[in-house]
Image 1 (cartoon, rainbow, N blue to C red):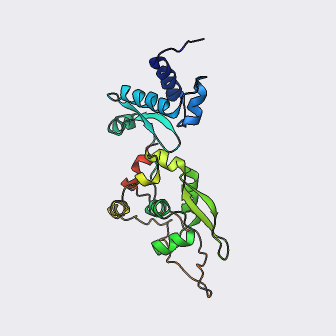
Image 2: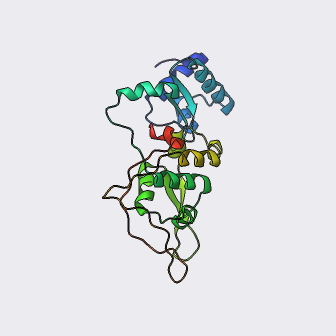
Image 3: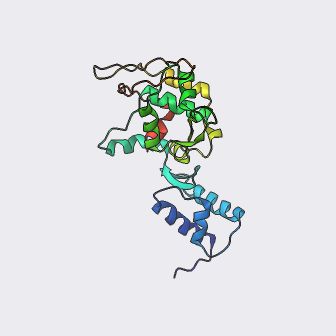
Length: 227
C-alpha cells in the first residue's frame, strides 16, 4: 500500500480523487480518503495548496455548494465548445424569468410567480426546471389548496459555480440581462402566455398548458447551461 508521509503525498491522493469524481465531493467524503483524523484547518490548508498548484492551468479547483471539484476555467470553455456535436440547450424567456424569481424570492408558489410575472405559468415551465435539477418543491404553504413551495437546489448553485445564494449577482443585473434578450417569436404551433385569470373567490384560475415559444437564452444563467 502507498505510504503517505509528506503533505505532497496527501495532496496527490486528494488530486486523484477529485479528478476522478463525477460530482463535487464534500469535505465529509474527502475525509474518508485517509485514516489520519485531520482537523478542518489542516484540510483547508491542503485544499488551498492544491488550488494554488493548479493556478496557472486551464482547469481550476473550486469550492461549490455541494463540495469541491475541478472544472474548466471560463475563458477556455469557448474552445471546448467546438468539440461538442450538440448545440447547448436553450430555454425560453418564461423559463429563465421563472428561475430568476425562484432564485431571488424563494420559497415561492406558482401563484407567487404568476403575480410577479403577470401571466399564468404553465406547469411545463416548472417541470423543465425540476427536470434539470435546478428547483424542487421544499414544502407547502399553509393556505387553501396547500400550494407547493419551490426553491433552488444545490445543483443549481453547482452549475452556476457558486457556493451559496449570497453569491448571486444583484437582481437588477439579472433583470437587465433578461430584458436585453430578443422577444420570443411565436410560431404557428405556439400560443402566447395568457394573463392570470382569477375565479369568483379571487383565486388564480387554472389555464390550459401552452406550447413553449422559441427558446431565448438569458446570459444571466449561461454558466449553468454550459454544464
